[in-house]
Amino acid sequence: MQTVESQVEQGALRMSGGREYGRLPRPSLKYTEEVARETAPLYEKVKHHIPEIEWPVHAPYVYAINKLKRQRNATILAHNYQTPEIYHCVADIAGDSLQLAMEATRVEADIIVQCGVHFMAETSKLLNPDKTILIPDLKAGCSLADSITGEDVRLLREANPGVPIVTYVNTSADVKAESDICCTSSNAVAVVESFGVDKVLLIPDEYLAQNVALQTDVKILTWKGHCEVHERFTADELLAYKDADPAIQIIAHPECPTEVTGVADFTGSTKGMIDFALGQKPGAKVLLVTECSMASNIQEQAPGVEFIKPCNLCPHMKRITLPKILDSLLEMKEEVIVDPQMAEKARRSVERMVNLKN
Ligand code: 13P
Ligand code: SF4
View 1 (tube, protein in one colour):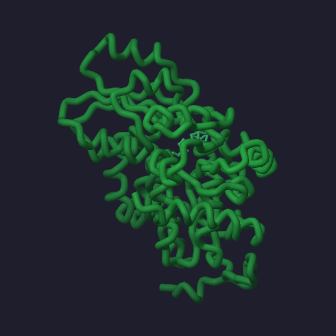
View 2 (spheres, rainbow, N blue to C red):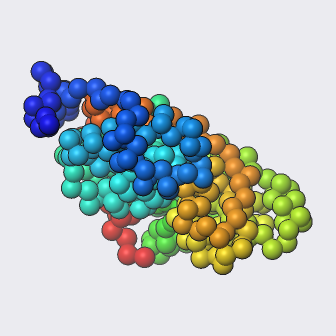
């Protein structure tokens, strides 16, 4: 058997900060007996979502990625919206934006591969300036992050002197650098109230801001950014499900318009939604008003619950695939780099949030 060292090919892959990683040979992607045997326990977790006939296509990637993670000393952080083969078969840690940010502060590996969108990888970089952060597709963006720039925040501050600026974590480092603190959908109310003032800017998600405003006496000013996935849900489509079966539990993400959260039985972050769904009794029907992959990812943990998915796909999250994760680890791409001066300021906003005691 070859050792890891003897498999390293000539030349090094040079990264920012002068870090170098050896080149590794491209693994075989044959569905061998060994691959079938080693990946069989993982297939058990995704068998209701990936037909048996398709597994020989995914399994060699799963096997190769898990081996490469050990060779590179890498950790994969995956958002709850990643596809089941990523979420269950190659991720080391999966969660919502807050969990991923918290976990990023605890990772010991040299390399983090962020299976999610760009702002999540940037947040990991801010919290781990000395680690190599990779994202399998640099184009995995977010309509909320694209809705606002650092310059917009500077203008908002000029126009609203003395009003604290809370920025949703779904933003670029440039925007975070101009903010007082970040928040996620898990902690937005607590962050807004942490200032002890009567008026706060909560940007850029208009609907998250409106949903938070319903839960606090703090006056919320906001921006016109929207999540392209959650803004498409309507109250009428949800009420049609409720009319057909009044026992159905509707759970929604706070990036949905308030007319949608207004008909939901529970509104919360992706982690909050998962916790709510897993707390339901066997036989319950739960309608998940969010991105499609969530229901598939949690079905195994709640076999007795029937999940109904009037779901929308996030095209950005879906840019991350097993072949791209493999390339990412093999070729050490795409590295996420943040200008050090901007990173210093942006990190303060993220760290204030992470350190906030709820
Ligand atoms: P969560 O923090 O709830 O996981 O949300 C992130 C996101 O992008 C939802 O669209
Ligand atoms: Fe951005 Fe919406 Fe996609 Fe989340 S689901 S990454 S908020 S576009």
